[in-house]
Image (cartoon, rainbow, N blue to C red):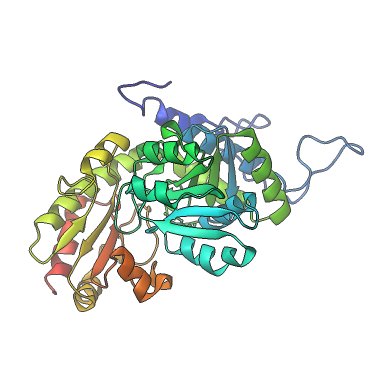
Length: 387
Ligand SMILES: *Cc1c(COP(=O)(O)O)cnc(C)c1O
């Protein structure tokens, strides 16, 4: 049911029931983990739709049905990690094709592009996609895809999805959106014109920091055919157990995202008022340069916050003191994770690459969990006192 006033009307019900119907043979309310590599065939050429588990597995089929519904796509294809999903997406390309990519995306993405895919003759241009004129200027005759993340990692810059979709389509290119930071609960890229939505399910979709995964949600029959074929050909698929973990995780996505958002807003306000914090990057703050676009395009602001401590030493001092927040890479779990992008997620960009996008050594990124927010704030307050 779509409701103009509340686009999330029915979301929690879909998350819990789409693809999650009781098992027809036993009545089990949770989708079984089909731990099998192959399927018995009645006779030559006669099977129940499953032949070999690299091609398809019933647990995976259920998750793919669920994720397609949640993102409003026509099909979904899950892979062993977010990076495996992105890699699969690029098998659509041919040598000589050009891709426009956001200049401030997950650090593993430019690493894949520059150090692996460039060797296959693909060309990449990086632009600040929050500047729609820059996107337009970067497009060439051979541009096949514009790939964006919004908000970006870790600078939390917001890109106008509808505007970029229009520009890409006018030039015959497709738009893919990495929706990992927002989850389908807070941002609906397909409704705004995206052709492909990508997620690292490792993060909010799974939500419990206990499995890796990635998904491509598609809008066209051609994508479905290509990505199902790629799953079969390259084999970087998600295991039945990890499919089951994500099916479990998405059941609580709506309530988790609501709580992540509430806690995120409180922690951002706390950091914004703290005298040791030089700057806070969070689209929910009125001082964020794209706050009004964020309000229009997103249904919540989420729980990803980056803040400037002023120097590497300051970041080091505070990160040594955190106790409730866990120092580590990744995000989107129920527990608060805190990280240092310059030496962790964005180390591969190099000093020059980081300077170009304005990522400093004093920046700290926090993925606010769903613990009691008073405890998260007290922990940060105590850690900031070390500066
Ligand atoms: C983590 C992440 C990825 C990569 O996903 P993996 O599951 O770690 O391979 C891609 N994009 C974003 C925004 C991420 O946070």
